[in-house]
Length: 160
Image (cartoon, rainbow, N blue to C red):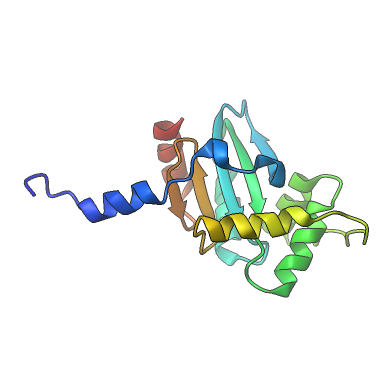
């Protein structure tokens, strides 16, 4: 009580952690900026306005490898766009073009295996990822919402 620290908040944060090595990275695609030495995983929906704002702001964060998990939870169109991005030749470019410049990804071939999207949804449900974007740092810390680049930098510094 003397420290005036919110013990409930600290406990909830600890319980919501996701061990980075438990993330199914094969179901994400990588975006490397600079030397890529710091790690961050992000769950995002292609129709999420907050995610688009977050992506524009993330251009200011350097020396990071982002593992981007397509997490289509905002409706059927999110599924279509996620599938088109996942099945594109260059997922990172397709994602970036859509999120920052509204350039629609090409329609995916019917034969494309997009089962990763279903696995991402199942993973998100299992770990109670209820909104987008949701960030998971290398130390397991989870942060919901489109936080500013300065806060991402601060958390990357303490997590890596």
